[in-house]
Length: 297
Image (cartoon, rainbow, N blue to C red; front, side, top):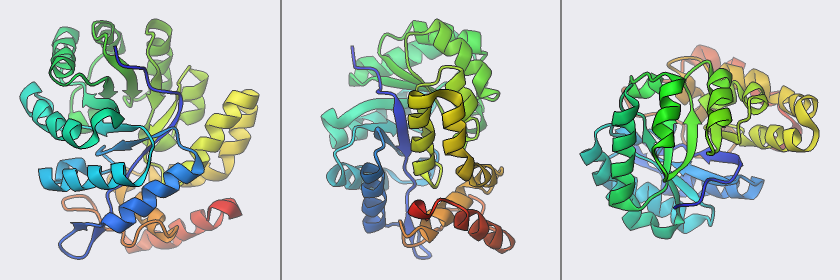
């Protein structure tokens, strides 16, 4: 069976675009993932929701995967966007072709509230690809809600599961049950908004697209070394920005603009129909960034 994901912070990678045609900005993407590697992330998650994977063509997805794989040596989790098995397998073939043995896990969304349907789907994906499966429970994107007890039942039937990404609020309660009843690492997401409580509930770390992953790393490392109080202290400087970026609808645009202002990408555009950043919020974003620790501004 595939190896379970290592604990820590798996950075979810944005897809930078250039110009009015929103072409994939390969140099910026390379610079961004080099930064993730330099600051000590455990691995990268590519073509997730933060990467706007659903708005990319197959050829653009190939470009993103090739750029990331050629730039860094980190293990890679790669997302697929479809819910039905056949289109998932089509996406997965491209992932396998480009990433090969670098693939630490294929991130597949829960596609039904029925645990038997979910388990059959995930097992079919593994049997066809040989990939370890990262089970993503993210109803805000998939529009599929599953009870935590049923998610446990589904994952128990998937020997190839290498992790669960729990993004159905309230995440700490779900993570507590998942970690108590499964022998699979569970990661929080949602921009790190609930990270402290998720760690307290047994999370293995974070897998999310916060614009300052240094804060996620500092929090998780402090939790390991000093427990809750140390992790809270390490995370405090970042929490206003975490909260600011968590605004519904514009969170993606906020995060990409913050990444641009940090000098990690050239432009901050998000592909339509994603919401653009309102100009009125730019001064607030600047204040939040200015308040970060000096070494990460």
